[in-house]
Amino acid sequence: MKSIIIRGPLGVGKSTVAKAVAEMISGIYISVDEILDQNGLDKAVEGEGIPLSNFLIANEYIAAEAQRTNGLGKSVVVDGNFYHKEQIDQLVRLLGEDVAVFTFKASVETCIARDAARATPYGEDATRAVHMFVSAFDYGTVIDSERQNIQETVQSVLETLDSRLTLIGTITFRELANKITNLPHKHRQRLIAIDGGGGAGKTTFASCLQEEIPGSHVVRIDDFYRPPQLRTPVLSTNVINPNFDWDRIRTLVFDAITGDKNISYQLYDFENGTLTGEVIRIPPDATIILEGVWSMQKAFIDFYDFCIWLEAPMVLRLERGVSRDGEELREVWEREWIPIDESYKKTQQPQRRADC
View (cartoon, rainbow, N blue to C red):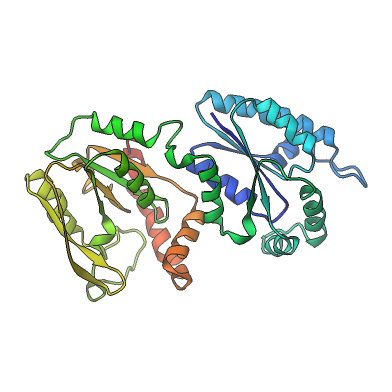
C-alpha cells in the first residue's frame, strides 16, 4: 500500500486536500498535529517551538498506525507542516517502500488570508512564522496550490500518484472491468450502475470504465432531465429529485433491456433546456453503464448486474459542482442538490447495495 505525505505552511490547503485524497482512495487520514496532541508531544519550548525530538517520536506513532492500516489493505495520507528535513527523512524511512511526498506552496499573503477565513484562525504572526520555516526547503513533488482550487489540487495529487487507474484498495479499472464482464448477466445486455452524490466523480469514473469494456455505452441520467416548463419546485429534500423523467428512463432503458428491444433516446441540451435532435441508438449486445445520481434507487436496483457507489468529501463535491455549473448556482448546490443527495443516501442507503 502507498503512504502519502502532504506538507506545507498554514493556510495552504493541505488538510482539506489530504482528507479528500484519503477518502477518494479509501485510505486513512493521519494528522501530525493530532498525533502530537494525543501523545503529549505538542508542548513548545520558549524561543524554539516544539523540539525536533518530539516530531521524531511522533513519527514512530505514525509509522505504527501506517503499518496497521497497510495490513488492512489500505493506504495512509499523512498531513503536517514538517518544519524539519530530518523529520520527514526519518518518516520516509520508517514508512518503507512506496512513499510519495508532496509539498504544497502558496504566498504568505494567500496563506494569511486563508487562515483568517477559518472558524478559529492561528493568526497572522503564527502563519508568517510557519510559512518561513516550512518554505526553507522543498521535498518530493511541489504543487502550487495558490493557482488551483481544492478540486484541481486534489486532481494534481491523484494524477501524480497515477491514481487514475486505482479504485478501492489496489484494483484497477481493467481488473474491475474483467471482474464485471466475467459475471453472468440477467438480461440480453449487461447493465452496470454508477451512483454517488453530485460531484463525486461518476462521469469521469464511467468514462474510465468504458475504456476498459470494449463496445460498452454510457447512458447518463442527466440526459433525462425535464425541460424547464415541466419542472416543479423541490419542496422537500427527502425526495428523489422529481425534475428527472424517471418514467422515460424506465421505458427507454430498463423496459428496452428486459424486453429485448434496442435502446434509443434523445440527448438533453442544458444550454437551451430542450431535447436535441440527436438520437442515441445502442447496439443490442453492448454493455450499458448507467451513470448518475439516484441510478441505484430502490425502484431500479433489481435491474442491475453490478452496482458501484462513489464517495467524495462534501466540500470537494461542492467545489466541483460550482466549478462546473458556475458560482451563481452555489446556493442551489448548498440549499437543494447536496441536501437531496444526503437524504437519498440516508433514507435509501444505495451505498449498502453496491458491489463496490
